Image (cartoon, rainbow, N blue to C red; front, side, top):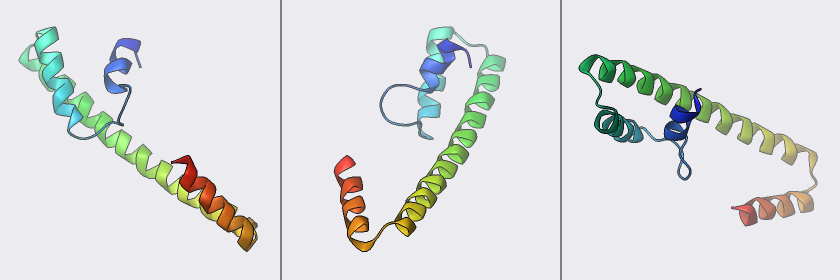
Length: 91
């Protein structure tokens, strides 16, 4: 992904959310003086990105849950309690 677009699609701070799509589109329209055709094409890109991001987020959540479960399977009961505390403290 080109660096310029990357900065808009991956801003520092909160993760991408569905509502951000409209914010980015309005910013692009205003600052780039988009034609109606360009606006339509960029809307398609942002829709695709939103769908792709949600899929990745779901997969990442699944990997995290699976990894945590697999770690807990290896630990003793006292270790499990310490591990759960470590996770809470890391948040």
